[in-house]
Length: 403
Ligand SMILES: Nc1ncnc2c1ncn2[C@@H]1O[C@H](COP(=O)(O)OP(=O)(O)O)[C@@H](O)[C@H]1O
Ligand SMILES: CSC[C@H]1O[C@H](OP(=O)(O)O)[C@H](O)[C@@H]1O
Image (tube, rainbow, N blue to C red; front, side, top):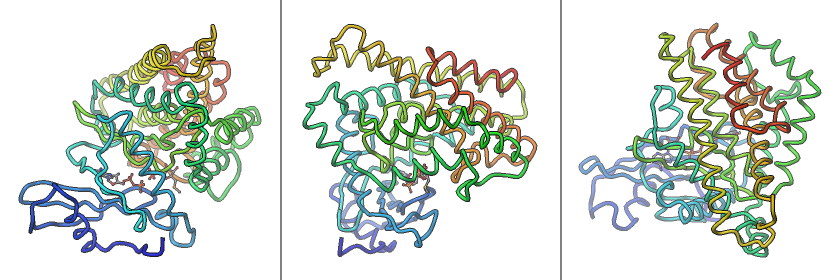
């Protein structure tokens, strides 16, 4: 990576100009740094005259949110590019087009999705997305099934496991999501008004055991190629379309981590609803919509995953009587457990979510934080005994008293 340097806006424009069939010769182009993520640079290159655009994402040799003092490998650009390629092959309608990858600059050039909205924003505006459950169910079923031992040649799958070793980014998840929130740590960030609830979590040894088991699965269960960070800032959405971006945390891990991450983000928004509407009926309706979405998402995933298994399983053991049912049952349990860990870490861990943090009124924000912690902890505790997605809905309903 000897030629690596951080691109200037002018260089980004020149690079974009060289991508074939996007901008006409001599086009007047503008560049804006638009990254609101934690790790990288994102340039939005546009031709105002035609409204055409391109996205250039450059990986930085450190985590932007922490600063240059903590170096990070540029190899995550290779991982993100490769994961996007696989995602694009398995789910072309649900992935951004990638036009170019420049390894020396750790740079990807991709489709401009500015006609969509970031899903977290959409949820904060109480948007309804009727195709979301089917689309995300399909994305999860296809990416997880086709990259697993169920569908792949077993030797090739091991090569993929090797190619997607992603130590630094996995380490972020292992530390910030699956460890620090359960003990006193300088990696935790929270407001003093919830200290009692946080200390309760620090003292709950039964909860710690469940988290240790989930963390063990994250460390050791190379079940499928995960997106690895499937939260609602990484989903672009509009009424008739959904695209998943930013798979730089991709690695071979437990399928339930991806499914749990998106469910957790729906429930974080659910927890914060009182901050986003003063109308009680509006809040109730939206909370019920979010719970329906959680149920539909799981149902769609299960339906499509089982169908793929029945039609495309390559592993001869896949036909073993009872195996599919047990596999799906364990997958639901992992999903529920990981969903709980994602919720907890986004309340008093290092990185939070706008659905909660941007609630202006401190008392309303505190209530949202407490609801989320209650749901998160309950999901973690329930994980190994859970039998149905309805249990997630019951836990969420109980935490708010009534929706
Ligand atoms: N293909 C795209 N089209 C439009 N905007 C994008 C696209 N990819 C990223 N962005 C914008 O850049 C932001 C950060 O991108 P992301 O890939 O999530 O970076 P990071 O890895 O730093 O989190 C997104 O939240 C979005 O606003
Ligand atoms: C120190 S980064 C922590 C946090 O950032 C990632 O988010 P994103 O790249 O989408 O901005 C990821 O969620 C990590 O947990």
